[in-house]
Length: 112
Image (cartoon, rainbow, N blue to C red; front, side, top):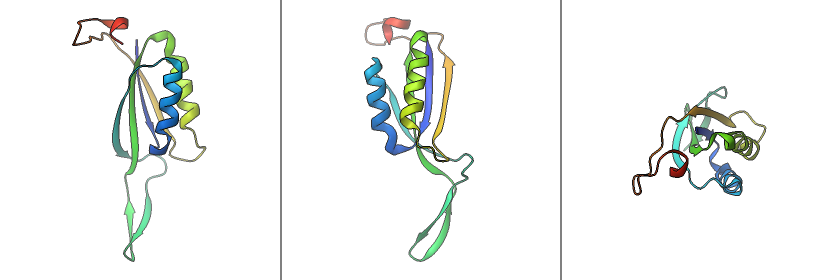
């Protein structure tokens, strides 16, 4: 089992969700986060004053999938989140040792 964590632009969420649903991914966790990478933020003007925005708004998506589905899920996220601009995001993949569904006590693949 794999845990896929993707940092994406907020307006790409619906496309990514639909692509993962089409693959059979049944659940995901989405968090609003702020950060920066190579783009290092930007400047904005508010009431005539210019100020630097160091951290840009992003979404963090966390999805647990069976190992054999990981490559397809990663490809779906990457293709739907891509705009071709700096700041499209990143995908991180880690192994999951154990998953437990609290309500039923199911474990591992059955708990997904």
